[in-house]
Length: 518
Image 1 (cartoon, one colour):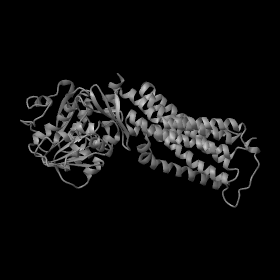
Image 2 (cartoon, rainbow, N blue to C red; image 1 turned 90 degrees about the horizontal axis):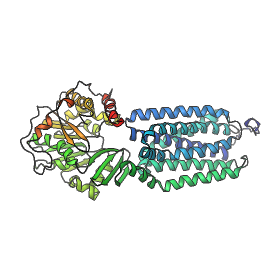
Image 3 (tube, helix red, strand yellow; image 1 turned 90 degrees about the vertical axis):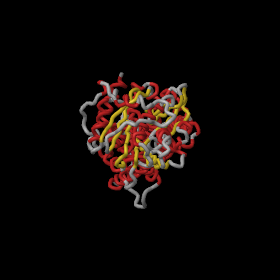
Image 4 (cartoon, rainbow, N blue to C red; image 1 turned 135 degrees about the vertical axis):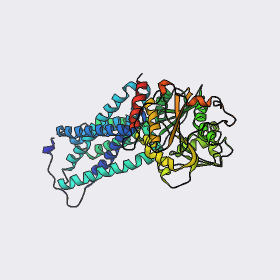
């Protein structure tokens, strides 16, 4: 029977009937599910491809375009609208629910095809989601007048989107992880299909076949939800090679710790942060040129560095009275405080009575009125996206300047001056743009290659004559060599990195992208 041939019904003056209520509730659910799939794709692309603003913008734009295509295609569905709606719900449930798992596996096993698969899935899911609401509205218009129909459907649609936009970063991903979140909402989409099967059981042809399809879809999604840990392990074991000893998703990042023949390694969103075999090189080079040059630092701040390795080096100075560690992610500081093996790597530094941990955004923390510090160690990840890139801008360094004592030193980890030469010197130019003196130096860390740092200060930097005991890498004799730059790392002209342009993020992506491409 065509839609036009359906018996006309007069909207019931007594208010919404059970069928209308059920379908409007379904609108809430399908809107929530659709947004979860969109957010999952955008979050995963920013995790794995970097540059969160670009990835979120292109994914959301592609998804909305695909929804428009789906809405346009809905005009060609004339007959058996409940049956079409049911089939679309099952397809969305399967493809959308499995989207995070598919992308994780693709990144591990076929990384070259990841981007194509990502946008292909976004187009397919977006098109199917775009079909849902028009079909529901056409089913509902049998019983609801148009002006009420549009307002009610859009109200439930927007309410579903609001609920998910809040729950996704605060509850769903931290508690369930990305894969289980996708599968859970796939189950919810499939449940809508089951509900449609019951509501329209008298209109559907081959209701038995629809029932079997609903059962198989739910069984597949629930089975995948139950085995989500195995899926994650399968993908991450392939990607990271070494055995994973700890993994967790926080609202801010994916934390993975592996252990292999070369010891433990920490990855944040797939990017290596330290390797146990040579982290001492990185952290000694980061901390001691500034700390030893000061002479007798008492108050020290560490921005980033939630693994506690920099704090471990700072506590080698008897003059230190307090260390304030500002780390955005509480999962990081808790992990490296309570996990026996990982806490041993930082010498249980985060449990020291001298250390105060503040879990907040470093940019916001610097904006607050507070004490000045003799030494500030800035140990952020590289500027792979605009959220991190803001911590390398002149606005950030102007705030850093206010919290640095007149005789103090700040030291900033600053990517590789060999691989990302222009990015490195962009940071130097940005530091100098706020009136601070920039003293660049570098060290070789095998896990990273040639790595760079910059000391920022109000006064000219003077190299120390002595270092604390227990050094494994630095000596007073070799320290001056770190401040010498060969021709292939020598300074080049660069722009200042500002909040308004974030040129550093683009430059960084271009320079490291060339290396990854080869």
